[in-house]
Length: 205
Image (cartoon, rainbow, N blue to C red; front, side):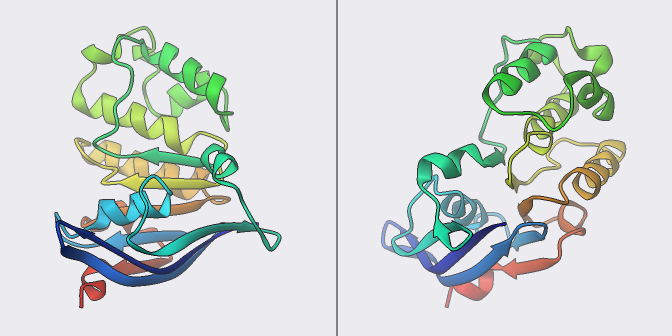
């Protein structure tokens, strides 16, 4: 079982401290939410937990069977979806999923994934021509349906309508039970399925 340990994490920008002394343990099979207002540091903390960004103080450890995992291996076990990360817009929907399958093992076959996400009829459509909601559903598919042990989601329901939000909630409940899921959000419908929540405002003192 994979476990992520966050030890006394602190981060500042231009001498202004964003948060400090954040410690937590994230266990496989559980879902967690990082809460806070816009600009509070949720995305920054998510990047640190994924080891995409380094903290000013503290450390993040990925451990399995009491052994610390090397960053090169950790990378293969992470899926990360965020508004600031883009898909290849010159690809079709099917080509995008094929690319993901070549770089990351998928948990289901592509046809099933496109059916789950209601994108099957758009499989030959170029990503640059998708509506904002379809684009977001495809982004979520590239993370939720990869066979990784950790899923990071930053504002996952951006541009989704009520029907798509319900689909997202179903996917998280049904297809991520074996993962560590960490969601950065300030919208209840994005994280209502989480087992544990952390309010980042409590780590600014």
